[in-house]
Image (tube, rainbow, N blue to C red; front, side, top):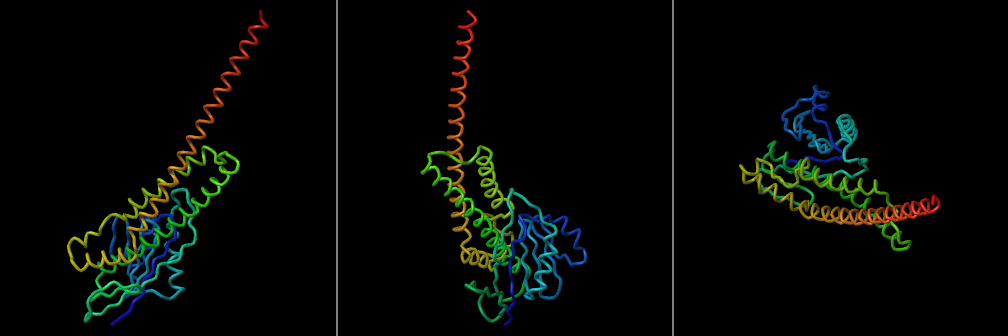
Length: 265
């Protein structure tokens, strides 16, 4: 029986895989896909670099070595969605290789019969998605706290303190998060290997259930939908206020025009 660590780290809003591949030619690249690069720095060590900003390290536990790789791949990062990356705790897990025991997904480890790249890829991807959802959930919480203060001010003073620009930015950012999760994070997609191998399918389903990815995504989508609805309501309030102001201006101009016409006579 062998126990190997695996950890997922959110380091950037997104990672430019083409730039990373170009700058890390000294590392053995064993797999290249549209959304992930897989490196093998040593035996029983794999590094998964995901385009959605997460680096998953398998078989690497030394803190200095982990920090070195994260700093190295972080140089290929991009800032997207007009958000700043905040500190998110890494997702740590253990892969147990035991050919004599049935494969199983447990709370603190996953047990496999053999150490295939495809199985490790599934584990790495699930951990990466989990830590990415944590990041976006933190962002949603920050936005929710901001909206809570706005609602309190609205209840006390009866007016909206957000500008039209800020509301439009909120609508754009929240909508961008959902698009990012469905698109780059591919949270709703199944890996191709799960359609071909029953063991891979069982592993995928078990990890997805254990990390509650579907429930967490539904919760995140609900929070963002609520904020979008609130933003649109506030935008309607501002538009109404703007329309009323324009009506007052038009009336004043009309009165002024009558006043000037009266004096001309």
